[in-house]
Length: 461
Image: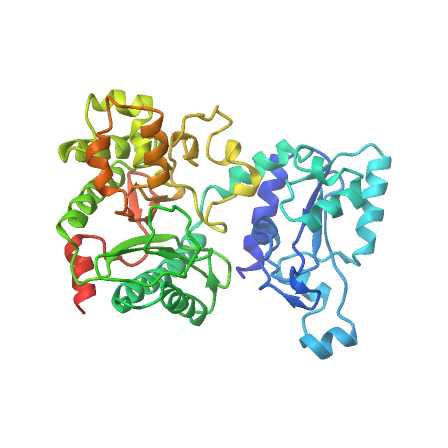
């Protein structure tokens, strides 16, 4: 964890942003896979980590704004716990690590909150995303699990977002550590892929590197010859000559900051002429989006620039036609690019998505309902301290081709006759992570092979 001073400073800043009441933080519990004692790897709630830094299950905390008290709640280990799990610091010792000197058993949390509610005080809580915490909210505050999200404190959400959205130097250093490991994961996948290999073999190598670096995967590996499926977590296919592999993966450090990179590479040592042509279009859009990154530019405009560049390239090879601006306004480009150009990242790969993209990515502005554009997670002006991804892609989705062609949609913009010969092409995506600086941007971490020449050089060994 970071120093106690870091967590003290974060909590003090939060207290300045809130007026009155009690701020309730629920840490995460262990999650059983198939019975109680066989659990998934533990992952602490990110906002709990941000303010309290303690990577242990079964904890909760409050910040009492009116009485200026900070308390961590949890139970001490029993002798049975110690026999099976080993020794851990006491609750008081855990609190001292993050600058908190008041601790109490878990059972006292309900009493504390009940007393506050009886006195007419407000209990602020963040939207729970795990079932056990929705049940805790019901037990503690009498709010039905189905209603817990809409009863979360908007004031609290906005205060947390306004802090976590700006990354400190020590956070950036941790993110870069995660990215450096992520680059190794991608290079290894590029180097080791070969015909007749199963996707799962590449996935296993990727995961090995993340764990060997002392952390974990930041999210389930995407490693597939079916790159047209945006979040493909199936690993049952066999690589064969003529395929491309789309790999979207990242490492998470022991402090739970993550990297998020994407690569696309041929199973053969070189791209085919058609693969090279589409890859070059994607790469042009990718570089155009990166070059436009700077404070004050709305990320929605970065996205639309990437879309415009993609359409220009696709029009040049005859897959699209008509007036480029109209094609984008109408959403015809979403045939090939039905998602967003990037998102915030930090303690969460889609940073603070549990708090609501309305507050994180949209500054409470209305979100488009248009297919493709509605999937853009970040559409606000960029500011120094933001860490974001850039990841435009080109995808050929047979089901979408058939649907739109059958509906005779965008006949003035899409050349369906030529598109038919691409229906089994797959997809291409590149992605790296960037810090918005005072006067521009900086690519974080080590460089990843991106250009056609760089990728082919790795493939040839």
